[in-house]
Amino acid sequence: MKAKRISYVGLLLCFALLINTHQFFGQEKFNVSIGTGFPELLNLGVRYQFNQSQLGLNLGTVPLGKNNAYYSLSSDYFYHFGGQSKLTHRRPWYARAGLSYIHSEGEYEILKILFFNPRIGRDFNISKKIGVNFDIGLIFELYRDEIEKKQHDSLLTFESPITFPSLGFGIFYRL
Image (cartoon, rainbow, N blue to C red; front, side, top):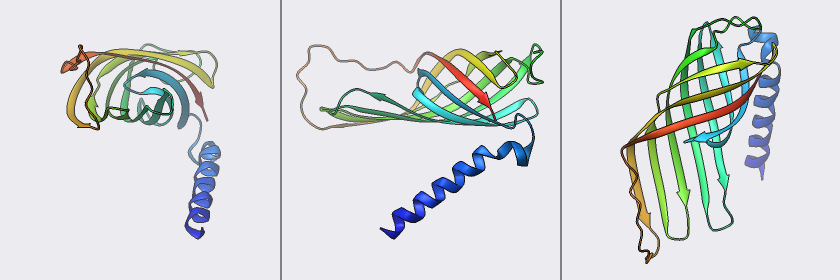
């Protein structure tokens, strides 16, 4: 029980630091986001900005019922290179490169996949604090591990190609 209490205290301290980051690091250093896309799924994220670069981390899921679970963890680097915005000094056009890990567990199998996903995208600033982003690119499968839990008698089988399209949409808030 003591270990759980310590972890809750740690989570509360981390949350308090995230809320107060603007006092320590200045304007627009941290962003929080909510979005959807593949391979990030339905996700919550945080990004740290320095100059025209950002480092991001997302946690995602897709609720598909009690017998299926899909989770994602993504880490991304963003470089803002083009255009101008009247609402922020960050350029709206960006290149994004990231690694995404997906873990899915269903009735018939457990699947673990690691992707590399380069994209190009754009921020659309609504205000000095709020904006939306859209990006599109490709996904390259780097690693796959499938564990069969029980035999599945299906006429159709699907093997994903090495490369396929990816896209994402999100809403962000600058702390």
